[in-house]
Amino acid sequence: MFRSVSRFAAIALASALAIACSDSSSPSTTAATALETVTFGPATTTNPGGTVTMDFNGTMMTGMEEYVDLHQGDTTGALVPMTCAMSTDRAMITCAPNAALTPGAEYTLHMGAGMTGSTGTPVDMSAGMGMGGAWMTSGMMGGHNGAMMGNGWTDTAGHGGMLFTFTAS
Image (tube, rainbow, N blue to C red):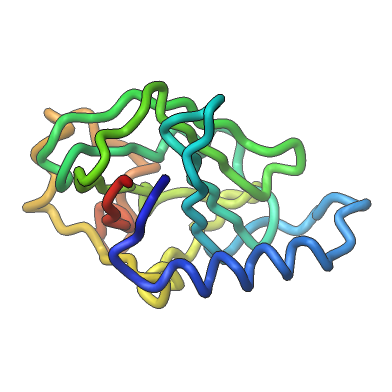
């Protein structure tokens, strides 16, 4: 299970209640412009690494799930293999580590700052700051060995992404 080092519990509960009470019968046709929530789910028998869910306020450009990484420790640490998928309405990305995470170890979720909505408009990641996230700066890119180049990883302000650090339990 993920044990966040920030204020995710209250946000996750509020997000779950909002999602449970919303009408999801008609998919959004509005292009995403902002990150809404990041939720860390518990580890289970069938998914010992837990899940991470990122919700957006509209549809994302196809392929944006490829701009999410998980690192051991900080972003200079090794990448943790995981599988990410976009929801059918392209308003949510769900990622799950391919193996159990080490209990008590710290991990960093990295979301590329250059993600775009379905119309190509950049998605505002700044809401992540209120969820315990932090902007990634150029000095934090060591673990990518140059693989973090391209439009999906950086935004027009030069941010390398939004980071969320947590401890696995």
